[in-house]
Image (cartoon, rainbow, N blue to C red):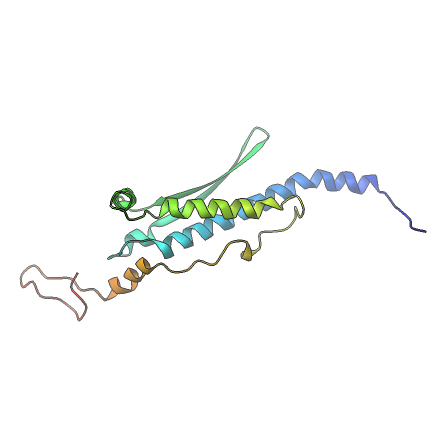
Length: 166
């Protein structure tokens, strides 16, 4: 014979905590996706980055706010350098590819997949394996090369240092 024990007090308490646990998990998952997106942009930016300013200036920022009883979560993908918009537009119009939209779409898709099973395990923090590993794009090699590049002097036009001409 099997016995069934029902504790309505414990059930009520757990149901009261459920929205808080779900909200915490969503916040952690969105924050994790933001970090993943920034890492992906920096590693897969398609341009040659002479100064590393453009690549290191790629960033994401999360925003979590309450609007009445609704919780809103967002991720901003952006550039810190003033010419970042031109990198996006120039790449798009010349048949190349910008870095923000090609990152935003798969990160958004991966984020939604991560949130799909949330009601099954509301207290679980996001696991690192929810998002695929970021591989380095060939354009990222410019970061390493830029450190060896030398600057031409105005007077002589010769290279200072032993690096390549820019």
